[in-house]
Length: 125
Figure 1 (cartoon, helix red, strand yellow):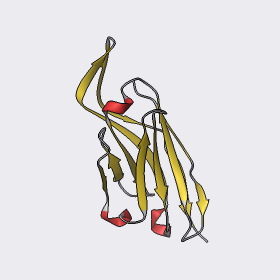
Figure 2 (cartoon, rainbow, N blue to C red; figure 1 turned 60 degrees about the vertical axis):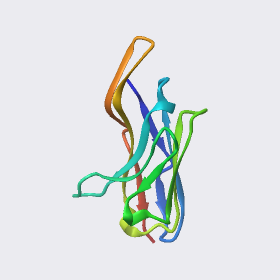
Figure 3 (cartoon, helix red, strand yellow; figure 1 turned 120 degrees about the vertical axis):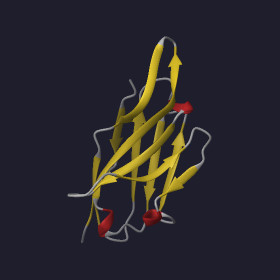
Figure 4 (cartoon, rainbow, N blue to C red; figure 1 turned 30 degrees about the vertical axis):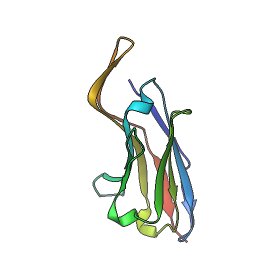
């Protein structure tokens, strides 16, 4: 199992910034792609940003130039720096670990997607 715990959400005014963190358990963190997704009320969950084990990143068009994803493999943590926040960024933000292809490490088998419980970001004046 890969357990993910998000933190850093909260209420911020339009134009403000927040930094989300996601701490991961397990020993395979440095080998897998990690990402941030978000889900606004009544909408589907969409990917916001992702970062591969090698550090390559990609972003949804709606956040390019405003959000930055990063990872610290020494701390098993990823971050999402969110600047110039807009009311439409309001959502629950989820951390995701994508283990594809499967990994066998020290007798443990890892496969598929793992999710955190989410952290709420509200952008409002």
